[in-house]
Image 1 (cartoon, one colour):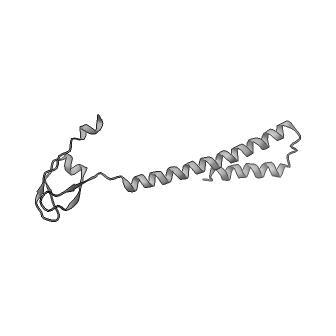
Image 2 (image 1 turned 60 degrees about the vertical axis):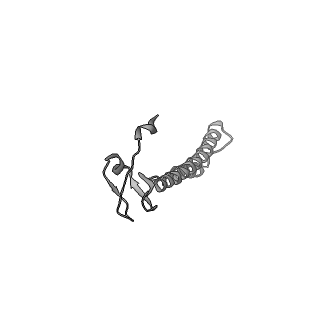
Image 3 (image 1 turned 90 degrees about the vertical axis):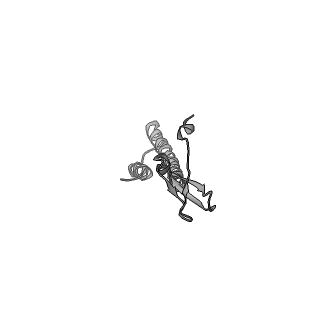
Amino acid sequence: MKTLSERVSYLRGLADGLELDTSSKQNRLLTVMIDILEDMAYSIEDVQDIAEELYEEYDINYSDDYRYQCPNCGELIDIEEAAIESKEQVLCPECNKPIKVAIDFDEDLE
């Protein structure tokens, strides 16, 4: 599928090929509209690029993990939210001792 700017460029090519006489009001209107469409297409594509970068950054930075420090050995570990919600016992990968983890997820909603 062609991009918006490619489609507007095609329109510009058609208009140029017709050699529109811009002294007529209708042709002047068409050429101004094509100019505006071209500006809009570039602006929309810029916004799309920015949105893609933001979503990529969000995907990289977002995680369902919580970082805890083991009270036994001091090791920093990441624990998945699902493990915390299921209340399964979490063992420190460094010292293999259980870690008591409790988060009230309903607090985030208030």
